[in-house]
Image 1: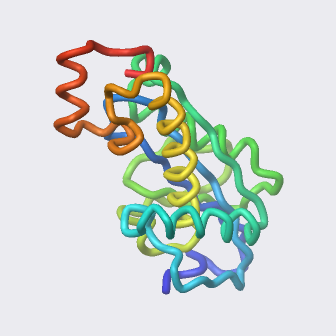
Image 2: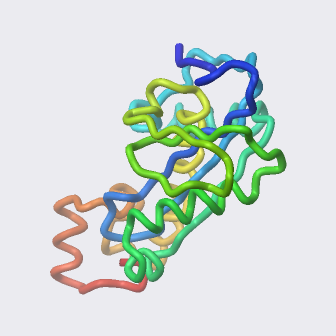
Image 3: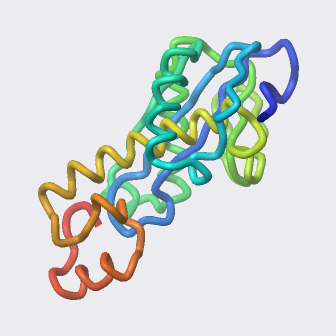
Length: 184
């Protein structure tokens, strides 16, 4: 069972993103504030869950969260500001759209640009330690996967319904054969 909070008696938002290692598609970031008494035995790092379990848990998170938001940063912006800055921008946008202002932000990973005057803590592999980060991981991954499945309908040769834009052999071969798209 993941930890429900970093520090008791504060409103914490967990943040994570999906799509940093991809060759195509956006980076999708999420911010989630869970109730202090939230607990679910299956909540975990989205990479450790099956697609079916992630989709189920997405509904659990959306129904249980005090507040949540998802933000998208497109491929063109990623190319212009780099993936780290795009990830930060996405997390900031997600935080901007929360209906509740957090006292503290927990971020998966080791880098984050300060968000206003709200203190934060970066935690490597935090999506396997804190429930709010894991919840953000689940939302970011499921929303991004949905986008990539829609993009697949426009560009089926790249196999995005299965590889979601990651650099698999199928995807790399498609780039060699068909070139890049606006989503690359």
